[in-house]
Length: 135
Image (tube, rainbow, N blue to C red):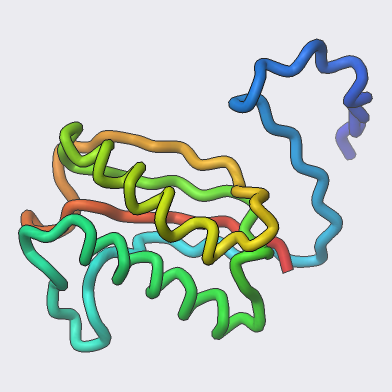
């Protein structure tokens, strides 16, 4: 059996501003919600050229997965957003400013990693989200 090393948070050094996060989670189970994209229940791509519509559908799919597990937005401890085009970064930030206050009503947004990739599973998909929730 390997030794477990406990890291004292005070020993981590000075935080690096708003981009330095440490989250303490006491949970018995983690949910990994991967590959949520802007498709409806029938598998049809929503808003082929509409980034905002795809964001709305993508996060609705994340919410559906959370609810199916008896969880909600407050259970999210980290998520990763994949964008295909760099010009969509301002569009995502606009979506985030508009919608995140509704999702995370306490104002505590979980850490988000934003990655650029060549393309998603289908050419017409522009955004994908993976989330980790503690329940």
